[in-house]
Structure formats: structure tokens, C-alpha cells
Length: 329
Image 1 (tube, rainbow, N blue to C red):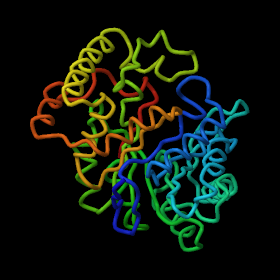
Image 2: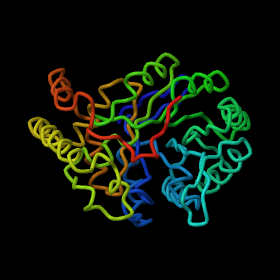
Image 3: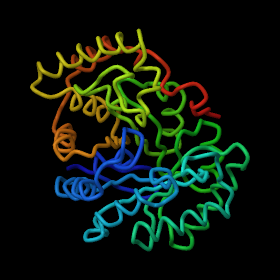
Image 4: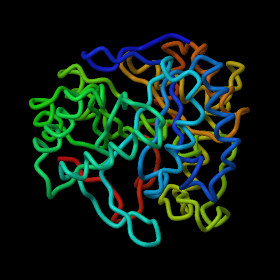
């Protein structure tokens, strides 16, 4: 698989990465640990060198990071591991607030190093901007970890243009991670221009629209109670029906090219710039192999125009339920 540079500080990864959140949370009951390890190792076999985890994905227990750490231990020097800080957790293990104070960042980083079985975190992201902590203090804390050799690169997630600029002035930001897909286009107006101006790479999470850009889509009420899609506005009522019609049209275009809808959606993202590295997540080796195949797909100008005609403004409905939408500043 080809390599892409993320930022100007030397970070280079495979053009497609692997998101691991769904192995332990968000999309119904967590999967089998051994299956998750097998999927990560198969991704490495296929040329994937970029693996994305977070403290949040283990609900503060380290479970998701432990899966990643065990899976890549035999080839640790061949891959890039990204993890994230920024949440606090209640007695039930659920996130109950933000905390990006420097002492907390250092504490989470030490735990992550232990869970990941490594002596350095390749990319350390602030998972969500903490309005109670100046972003300069956050960037300064990560800068200190970089100077100590415990972190290599600084990343941000779901941050707005002004916050990105302020952080970047303290410690160069190598990569911004924010939702982006055929179905989610908000970053195109203000965020992508700023990261490109500053030389920051971009990592789209949920590049398959949390599963909407696949053939395995169904209305909200048919998902498990623990599945975030059960309350996602895009799976509700008329939004679902309109989005499903768009998916059917994208499926027709994909079929005409002899590829799948997920491959079409990932190829579309790869075509948006060589500074973009999507991280589709899956528990399934079969789905993984399908996703990796997108790296071999070339879309014509006519294909890109047709995709724009089908989904000119992305999906119908907000990308998060009320009260959960990240606020960019």
C-alpha cells in the first residue's frame, strides 16, 4: 500500500488506516478480543501501518489499547499507533466530562504507554477540546511529552480553525482527526483550508458514515440498544429514507465500476487530497479486506461529479444527537 505524509514533522503512514473503536464500543456489544487482534494483524499483512485507538474506547479501562498493543507487539517498529486523551469516566465506566489539564494528560499518557506495550506513543491526540483549559496549556503538555521522548507527534480531534492555530503556535500539530465522508462534508468550508495552510495532515474518522455507506444499513429501531446509531438523527424517519435513496444510487455507481459502495466512498476520500488518510473501522477481516481494496480504485472526473450530484451536501440529518455535537472554535 502507498504511503502518505501527515503534516510537516515527518509522520508517514499507509494511505488507509484502521480504526479500532468498534472492537470494544459504540456499535453494539463489543466484539471478541481474539477476533480484534486477528483483524489488526491481518491489516498489517495487507500493508496497513496506521492504527487508531483511544482511552475512551476502553471506557477508561485500557481494554481497546490493550488489544492494539498485544496485536502489534511483534511488529511494533513497523507501525504507527495513535491514541487519545481528554475524558473522565464515572463509576459505570461511561464518560462524564472533559479533562485536558496537563497533569491529567501526563497521567493518561503513562497509562496508554503501559496498555500499548510500548515506550513511545506515535501520535497523541486531544480527543475533544476542553473549554476549561487553554489550548496553549494542552499543546505545551504534549510538547513536553515529545521532548521527553514519550510521544512523537501531536494530534487534535474535532477542533475548529482558531483553536488549531493557537495550538499549532505552541507545538506543531501533525494531524487533525474529524469526521469526513461522502455523507459528512462540514470540514470542507473552514477546517480543511486551515489545516492545509498550516501543513497539517487530515484523518477522517467514520469515513463510511458509521456504516451508512455500506450495504448493511437498517432503520434506527432495528439496532441494538447499545448501538449509537439507534439515536443518530441520520437513521431516523424521513432522514433515513432520503439517505437510503442516496446510498442506493451510490451503490449503482459502484456496481457499474465493479466495486462495492464502501470502496467507492473510501476512494472518494482518497481523491480529495494526498494529505488525507481515512481510518475505516471494522471487526471483520472480510470487511477489512474489502476496505483495503479501495486503495486500488481510481475514480474519474465523471465519477466524482456523479457522487456530488447524488450527495451534494452530505447526508440528511445532524451527525450527532442533540447535546453531543462537537462545537468548533
